[in-house]
Image (cartoon, rainbow, N blue to C red):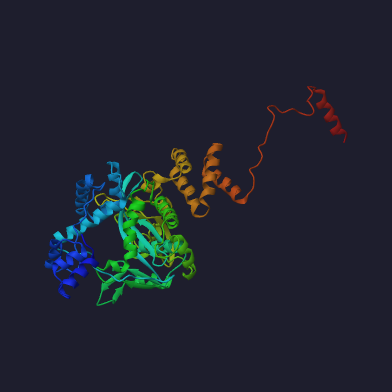
Length: 508
């Protein structure tokens, strides 16, 4: 084999200086056949046969190619990473490096694109962001075991574009109130509010996509943006790379978090764990573009973020009419409302975790929100027995079989079992329950328990005990008396004393 310099000399002597092949062979020491071969090829640099060297991956090449073909047919969310395949190969006995496996995968994907006559992902312009300039947001669907049931979740992803600090929070739905609640929590964890927020054209933010960057923004979303004082920017349709950092974060989170997430009793515990893991990963992940970890760059960026204002009151309001049974319907479930508002319209304010009912400019009641993914059941009914006390004043007989009163506290149930055995016990029990409308419920329960312990479970006794508790007066000390009374002067059995008393009377 000859190098490029030798070939250049041969070509110059033969083609420019017109030396014979014999003379060139004598000067270079090469054979005349070798010189003729390179001159006939007309090439300016020599080509060498591709070097083929054995690799530790060769015995596993077919297995790895099969895995890559299988993963290519799966959805992007379910695919294994090259690192996971590398670990699986090690379990089969592969002793080579990860770089060799990654190079094999890259070559396999390039050959697959050529075979399909398609192009790759295209070319893009790298982006850079200043401290506090922007954050990116996206939703994803993931799974976790909650209360022993594998549950599909909608996960909100936030990522600061400069420091790359990220935050995840899981919800059962992708609705307005969930979106607002996610922003309230995210800005607290991230330490402030950037100047811009980058979103895709999600329904909870954009009502209509117009030409270019023009959007008809949802009114409630615009109110949230105005509250937090940042500018909302929306990507072009089907252009997820415009917020590529959070798109990558969605993919990375599936391997860093969701494949190792333990089971939890509920969503609150899961979100607490997600927050702790996100902050811990900031200290483990190198930033890549700037020196230090994500946590180091975030600590410097935090000063450029606007301080977090008070939480946004992120509810979605509906108008509901209360039924004659003092219930309103929402998402196939029913919730009780105080009886005075029956058959009247009320305002239902829907939050991520609770429902607030308002009427006449005041908050009427509040319930924990029930969210069921099963659309085949009849739904649930949430009662508050206090809401039906006004009805009991007119219909005390409803206390015996009324559905709202199945959830009475234990002390009230024991009192009810005692009073219903007496004539007029229904009415007396209703009057005891009505005490919670005017006094603290815990004080009424304490009075009922004391009355039950004393064995005098009556309305009068309960009122007496309750007033003593509210006044702060101790109970009167018990009166102790001897078993038999004794006279200080014992009477005498003497009838003559009567005559003596008569004599004294006549003398006077």
